[in-house]
Length: 462
Image (cartoon, rainbow, N blue to C red):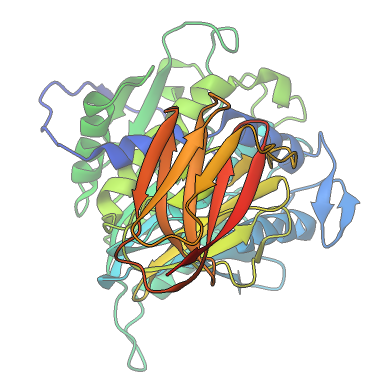
């Protein structure tokens, strides 16, 4: 990235925005560890899996960065609800574009971007940091159904003339041959977001720049970012630069009359990486907590502007099962270790038979969301002995009685013969009754589990 020093403006008047807790939840999902790993891999300081083998990205210079492009594309393709493609714009340059189509207003587009090329080796801050942040935002937002479309764009050949972004923006406004101008409502460019002059991880000024100009609704994007900054809790201090620099990719959208801003470390206060455009720009100089805060801020912006649809993809975990918190719709449980659906597991609740990592996809019409993966450990297979638990009468007509002589905390489910859960309860009581008068005659199963034991008892309803 090249920078032009400009006049600094501080913003005092802030508009108030009120958002739901779910936006906070999404911001909280930004992972410092994920950002550290991605920057290390992109800068070539750590080997990574690309095209099925362990490889090292030794160059991101524009004429030798195909491996970096493949890395980015593979990471984005691993996320749900994204369509990922290369956009070739000359013999060597190619952008990586991932599209998350809006469910309500697909033509309304919000775009988050960063350039992935560099001028020499390593270049961790410039701009592995921006790329890592875009990938992390995509990881989080791709699990959500949104009203509007989000595009995650990684540009090539920024360092030799902003070529990748220029090509995309020019294509977006092309109205020849029946094309229509893309309705891009906001662009946030993340370029060099990892350096803060204080020692990494320590308290400091944590200043960052928003570069903006009075073009289209760019001032509105700046206002929205500052409102999010003040609505939620961040360890950041904003500096508004107006007129902002034209020496990074956002300016190519200004040239086409689109709303755009640059978010990055504070060049305006001379607090940029001292190893700019050298191979000394290394991971050790990155303040990852500062970078995490900036990634959270931009995640909050896209969670707000994209419009979250009301589908709950969270889980509740008990000692014996996982349950989707969405009460209507369709369900598909996923084995996260293999990233494959689990055959036949399409109920709201799921009882794993082996320890592992699991998630659920919930859908309501065209909207599909996947939960985070949770670790589940299967309880001991040791069964209760007859002196621990007594279930009677069997056969039963009206009231099923359970005596808990073990005095343990129990998780009890009553299932029909197909495995559908009809009753679920937790208890420490010595004695309880379950009304089964409404059940049809047939065979049912009572599953009883504690932290250390479990038993399944077949009963007959007359």
